[in-house]
Image (cartoon, rainbow, N blue to C red; front, top):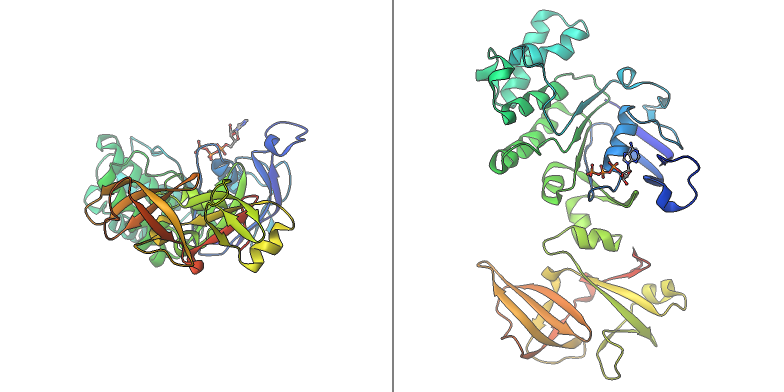
Length: 364
Ligand SMILES: Nc1ncnc2c1ncn2[C@@H]1O[C@H](COP(=O)(O)OP(=O)(O)OP(=O)(O)O)[C@@H](O)[C@H]1O
């Protein structure tokens, strides 16, 4: 296992990149701790696979270096990097038995047969493949084949890291859920460095200790599930994580207050000092609040804003409500039903749960 550092990394597939959009990966400095369970999360095309392939050596970065445990491996080919990679679709030998497939990476490195058996049986046990060890891989269903691929990725204890590129795509939803939990247990037991690429937030948040969120070739935040939920550093994280995502309300600012509309008389809220100084004379701020933290109150108070109920849905365990506030729609997840559509209510945004963004970056 290794600590992986990517100093001054950037990558453009086209020659002579000029504008930020020319880069598949915009300039970044990243470090992956030894033994960490990371997820690389972001929408299609944001650069996840490019980053993974730079670590494994399938892609050479156009800028910056790749360092494993202090050693520069930028110019080493994949086979010299000691990385295991698991792809979306099974990569196994159909004509071999499950045992021989799992044993292959170990035999290739000259392990003694007794040690091979011990390790293969251990990994097969963790992935619930023990009963299939003597079977030929060709006769198995696609999800069992993908479990073999996962096992082949995990079988060597001495790899610098195991990289998973959307490895559960072919697995049915129920087994997917089980395998995700299994991979987390396996990480705790084997203490391998794992990097797991996905565009699915549930997959990322259940698997990883740290989630690296990417959009448009940029890493916008690295954090635990709780940090990403409670303190998104970038509006994209607020929007992408959560179901539904964070309310993001672009508000004009006048005299230290952010207003929910441009008409005279619409409510505003006082900006905290940090947000005011970050604005540096700018005239707009984006207020971010999770639907879970919006409060609907019956009476007006000094810290409430007037709202109109637009719609209410009973979700069984809670109510989802949309409110019109000035020119915005604010979504709230509430325990009790907040009156009916068309009625006037007041909303409260608890200060400790209300975040402020300027140019998409959190300032307070
Ligand atoms: N070999 C290539 N040549 C040119 N452009 C590429 C190449 N591979 C990827 N790209 C471009 O680089 C950007 C990042 O792609 P990448 O595959 O890394 O994203 P991703 O987040 O893994 O997406 P997906 O989840 O769809 O695989 C995209 O705009 C893509 O079109």
